Image (tube, rainbow, N blue to C red; front, side, top):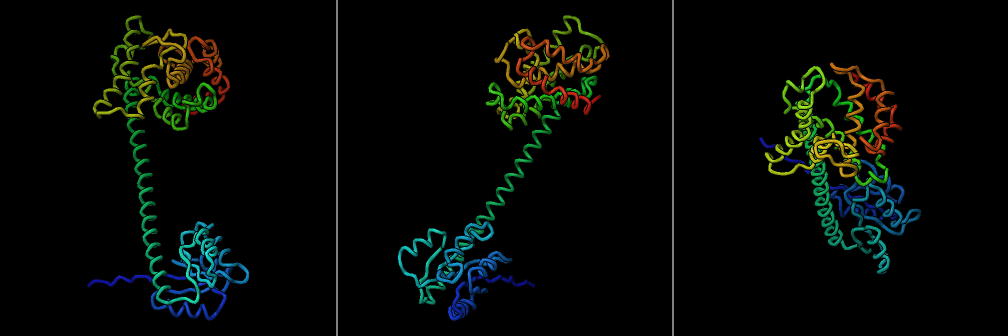
Length: 365
């Protein structure tokens, strides 16, 4: 058995200080609409802001206290009531009066004495317009929520992809412990500190800093291509082994490029990951690898990663060495200012030493 759908009648609020006018309008509208009345502006505002709010307001202009213009202005200034259509009912017939009301946001203007069929037609028209506007507003709200949901979903997919790729490198080199997490946070605090700096502010937007944080774990992704006999060697590399290990920068960049080619397009969120993987072993004076480029030719992302990577390598214990103290590592970083590292990034590190200590302790192996 079908259950009949009960359609709620639209609610019309009639505002007029004259009892006869309230009675007249209520009698005219009551068969088609749910009618509420208010005999002054203050009461009209209370009713309009209550729950449920009216679907349309018929508003007299000339009233003691708050005029219809005052009420209209207050309703249009309130986010709760600004979308309720207002039809002015008034004996004021001058063009300037009508122009003023419409300029304030009123939907229509009906002069007194009213013509009942005209009133009913105008009310019905504006209720239909409001219903359509409400539908579109609800639809837009739904679409905006859906876009936000899918954007969050896409960001989560990006994060998972990056972390999955980083985990490959981490599982190959189990001596690194929490190196990936520590360097990730080092890079972020450096970037945030340098964000207002004239040399970096055009690059270090909030979005870029967020992507740097996400991409930093991929700096050693190329180690997945280094043979175990070298990667897992319990000691220092000889010259030939070091040359093989240096290839991890190119292998890392190429692995990301290969993934992009499989997708058939460049992926913007991996741009910084490619820079970091390929260039993070370059040095400010041009003595690094793989290309031996120098100064500002080295991407900012890689310059930040270079300092974070070296600092953490210095303080971390390995099978072939004990970890240095922070003071010893910081002295080496300072000594590399202008040779190994971008001078301004070293200056930022010096100011952020306490934060580096906190990060190192938080993610200690």
